[in-house]
Image 1: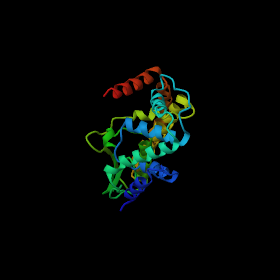
Image 2 (image 1 turned 45 degrees about the horizontal axis):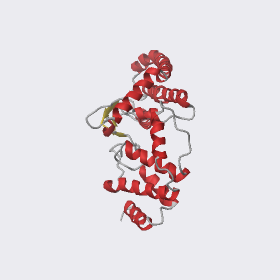
Image 3 (image 1 turned 90 degrees about the vertical axis):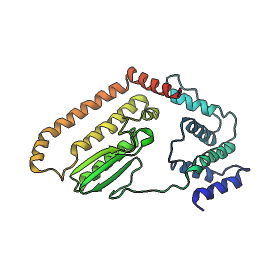
Image 4 (image 1 turned 45 degrees about the vertical axis):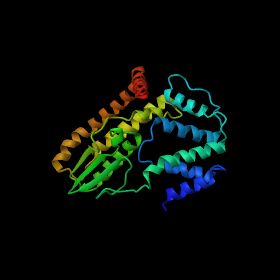
Length: 268
């Protein structure tokens, strides 16, 4: 009997008296092992039950009209009314359990020749060629913050070995659909200004810097001479692009485009 089956058996036996805090925390950890995106409706329910179980009934002000993601979360939490924290814990555990059941036990795999494991990439090295494959086919390989971080790590790793070339490709029928717009739904304490600054610095500045500095072992002396004259200019241009990204991400045009995207998606 695998761990998921044991937990499901335990949840069934204890359902009449409610899930324990330990079972609740276990379900919270297992949620991260889901192979498929459960969809926005299920994710809103998960969020609402989690908030109800940990904080009780919704007692926060309703978000503004422009905060469409925050408003959807608030509505989901508010809809639970006076459901007790114990009942919310049990419903949360049952919901996670129902999502995990069809998938069976999670089996971790590692690509052949890969020096490290990644959650959003498949990285392999063969015959001095490193292949970095975007691995979010259900999301058309849209790049989220985690993937940006892993791409940087993969580029750093390939720069340390004897790879002559690094190839970047994608799993499934789509190479990459660009930035994952759900990045914009995770607003930090500093608000949109801080999010734009952090996003531009992390996702663009650090990301492009790794392309500029990569492959130090594979360059010949002649390539080093050519690269040396352009390297500082590349960094300068990258810095300028970061400033422009911050400006555009905070623009009304960008916010309207994001709102239109999510509103159109909600109608599907």
